[in-house]
Length: 288
Image (tube, rainbow, N blue to C red; front, side, top):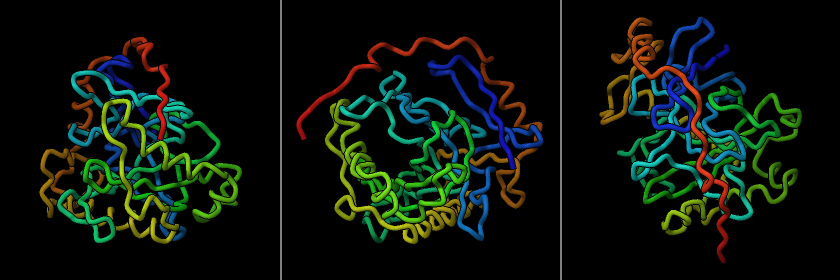
């Protein structure tokens, strides 16, 4: 199963979008149409790369837009870039989401005591390759961190790309601690402090910031898949979420290929990118 992307609008502007196609060239939603599993028997999942490692633009699946293309987050009318909080340059992993998952904002997690953040579940790919924006990769789940972001449960699932030459050596969270010393500590530090340059307090974590193991993480991912199933079947109130899809045949939100094509055709034509603001290269330092 392979996927390609089609860019619309000018990169580094609010009109920029990244749409997805399947192997037949039909437009799809990365949220709803890319299967959660690459290999269900072995618990290998698909993941959508939203932000390549070392970059700053906060790209995300546009959950409220038809076909859910990638777009850059906007705050207070401006495109959002994460700050470089020393010693971290941009995102320190390939960052993205697992398709066909949803952290239900109406469900209070029994472990964290907080409701979901209304998004697909997030992943941090620790593989060596710097992926490209919109790349769909196959990943092994290694563990998870429970971020509490402004009172919402926001799981961060630690994964490794199955095509990574070292993937065979990574099977649980302790393997990351042993083979990539410092990476997990840096991950907690990154999520704790990344909003501080915007004037926000440090983020908090469930489990005192401890990582949960592979089995816990896989069950967490599977539970968010169950929430998504209810969402796409209209058994849960979608609110502002757009559930338009082209492949979930029993979903009331399933549309024709022509309807999907019309959505993409209505977007702005792809054009030259705007320069990234020089302020994005600024470094922030502060005492912990």
